[in-house]
Length: 471
Ligand SMILES: [Zn+2]
Image (cartoon, rainbow, N blue to C red; front, side, top):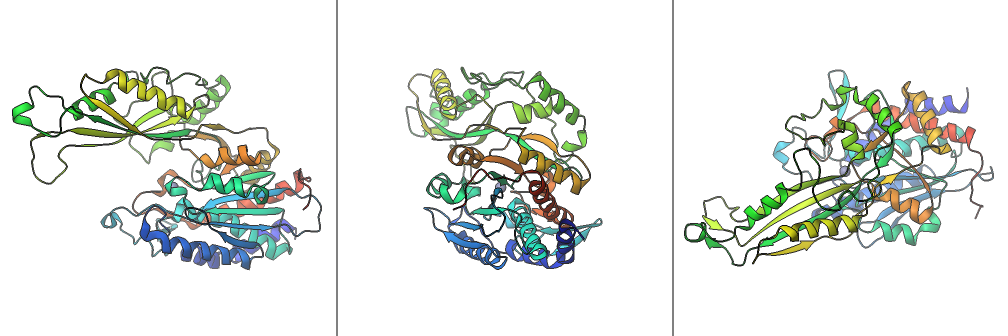
């Protein structure tokens, strides 16, 4: 039996135990954005540290200003200059929201059969505990079957991805020596469909902004002054409504400056995918507006957007209060494409709001930072090896896709470490991530684990030399 076959057999033979272990991890409420989640965060970090140590990596928990990072590595090998692979995953989860909306308890996962699918429900089931479990289990199986690891390995498991990774840039910079690698695999992304794998090569950037319009007066009686005084909610809504024109284009002056048009060859490829209408079955797009001249996928992956995430102001209480509010606030997110810079987009938005502000009113803004879009190289040998490995496991070629989502880490890793990044994941849009009854299934878990093993093998066969010298 070849090495590859014996590793795959090991995965299948031990699969039930592997699922059981994963459910243990999902049952830990590691919610990063709520103070009550701290205990779960520490427990999950320790659980992972111990698992990684058990399979033979040297693993530690490293404190940051926020939640800790679990960092593990292994370099012991007799083979010289094997490639150094970094794996990134995150062990924190989103808050559960309204518990009443969950049919299945968020932290008591068990496998149940539904329409022939073995599914398990729980917060973090898909995003992202099953994801990180795929590469950990692949490494475990490889070690068990072959006696050593397939390459030099670094594992970085973050505990604050779901609250914006505030400590990660500093962490990556401080630990750049330990993190250096030939390739970073970021395993927190979607497949194309339940039967077709994908590699994400294009990610949008992200900017958040809050804007508050303040009237010249505090709250006023709407009967007395409604006819004559400024209403900040009305002003704010007008400004927000004017951001888009009827063709779905953004009217903010300078917003499109520098934006790269989607190349014709890429458009052609995406158009072919677009025909696969089944892709959008999980959401109802009626009532939505797609920018004129672009297909659904082109708009989702290749065009910048502005979204209003929330509006507050005035009466939010249970009873009526006829009031002209003194202020109104909106929160917005901007999804950027290649060529746009976060600070320029923010400045353009602020100038736009100021240009529409009526006399006597004031405006306040809140928001800093943001991330730029990332377009990954498509001619990397690691990407090619990953595509071959995925195709073997799924018996279907891997789609090179874009995403409207942002993974700021990709930019940090390539800038700080000079690492090539390959973004692969096994999430599906129907997994209800960030929503009630988040779930995952055992088929994808098993094939996800097996995919990494095949990718390791392709790397082993095809990419013999690391660019790094041994320590
Ligand atoms: Zn998430």
